Length: 133
Image (cartoon, rainbow, N blue to C red; front, side, top):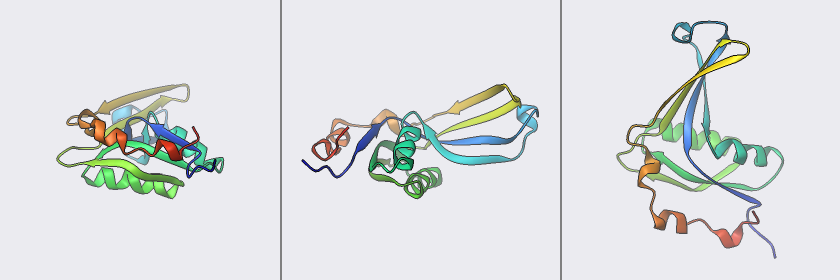
């Protein structure tokens, strides 16, 4: 049986902002790199990097960070047809600093998280019959 996707990932989708320098106080570093994050997106991106046809499931807000998360996933080869846009919700954010090369500081913000309002109908939209794993 042929499947449209090799892998589907299920989990929170966030936008993560990583400090670009190490050894600085977390609050002092004013340059950050934005990348999609959360629990499932790194797995989806890893699968796509290995030439797997990957599909992400999760939710983002109807905000500019949701746009950025979706664009980042697509640019990395991940299908986003089952990522749900939740009206009136804000995409969750993670901020990571590196005060020293062997440590990290992380702060997460998920006020009005789109994950909080995922429904059974959202989950039923995943085409599990078209996914190998």
